Image 1: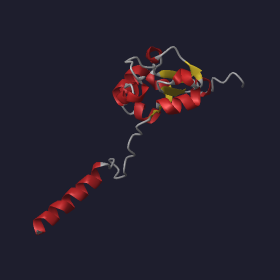
Image 2: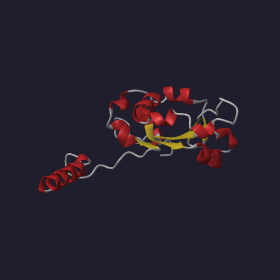
Image 3: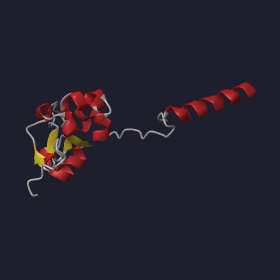
Length: 148
């Protein structure tokens, strides 16, 4: 009985340490429906395009939810892609976006995407926020903001 209590204590301590970073602080678990700049930049995914980054870090974003298939049909609505509120041509448009330009990618399930964007987004949506390059300092340390 004493050995099983010690084993239970060891498992509890080890599982508590599993989520710790090198500084001893607990690392937040990645959100299932959100891919952040920090996560992209701290992985090898930063070296490629946004499609590759999503495929590597959140492959579930590209999986067709079973609720998207219509009754009696195997056809499904495509995943909609938005940069801000501007709809893109499709998931292939992600190949033209550098992963380093992304602030976040938010996945909306079919119900949430229809509520936000209407029936044209009935297959779910990716909502992408990009870094505003006009606010990024250039090599001389000045802003590229044209309003200055």
